[in-house]
Amino acid sequence: MARLAGRRALFAIPALLVVTFGVFAIAAASPFDPVKAYAGTAALGADQETLDRLRENLGVDRPFALRWWDWLTSALTGDLGHSSVLRQPVAQVIGERLVWSALLCAVAFAAAVLVGTVLGVLAARRPGSAVDRAVTSLAYTLEAAPVFWIALLAIWLFALRWDVLPAGGLTDTGSAHVTFGQVTSHLVLPAGVLAISQLPWFTLYVRQGVGDALAEDPVRGARARGLSERTVLLGHALRSGLLPVLTLIGSRVPELITGALLVESVFSWPGIAAATVEAATAVDFPLLAGLTALATAAVLAGNLLADLLYGLFDPRVKLSDM
Image (tube, rainbow, N blue to C red; front, side, top):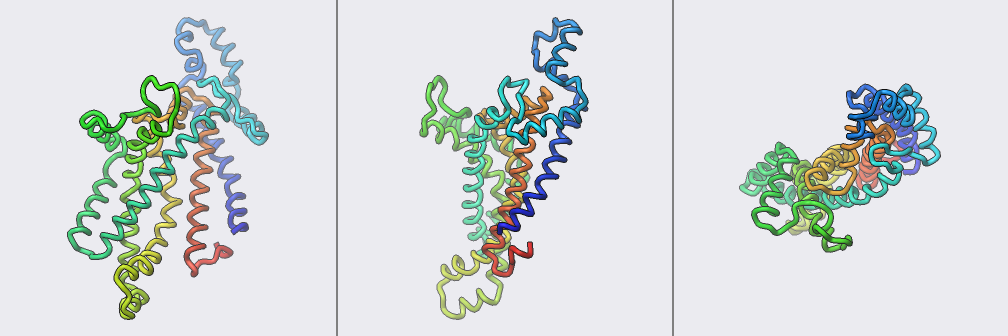
């Protein structure tokens, strides 16, 4: 396990270098002007000399390769730079918002795995039944639905029409303190929408995996020995059928991050989505690089987790061979 993690860590180094360098290159080619974004409306009445001086102070007049190298050498010492658009250190910007994005993604992912497993097992018990057709139809429908459309529909139904859940934010309007109850109530809609966007994949994978396991000889042998259907389903078929789902965990991390950005924007959730949008439109090089490196590390960690889980739960797979 340690050897596998070490190899993946070595692979992550060039991947992060390439990704962050690409961020600086793409941002340098962007039509947005970071100086005007930094100055705001004051840039409309400023003369060219003032704008050039501000451009020099921000360091955006230098080639992007030099800016990337300066950012990289500082990042190795723990200094991710200073966000020009948010007027804060990049580490502080990420630290203040990451906890809320992590909470949203963790709750949504856990709900998607749990509900998807239950629906997949119900559909796989009797292939071709009404339950199977209903579950698979629902899964394919949700798979085709854009996550922002589901979010807007959820706001209209639960917040506007029924008025049972808040439409957005982290706390109630006018609240001076962040309480557990307020965070929980405000988390239900965004986490539910994000979970629904991931639900079809887990449902279909579990349905296929459990359905194939039920047709295997070991499961048939368990039934022939007189074991109850519940024991056969949960103790034999489900354990074998969940193995393909483990590989799905890593591949869904990029989609989870993308969906979280959209959900956070719709529900005004105070995660990294707003910072990402502002960094992109203002061509905030240090913040863009920090957020991109964070997302890349999350994807690589998700793939490593999937491989570790697969090696631990499948006796046919040896971690030393991966």
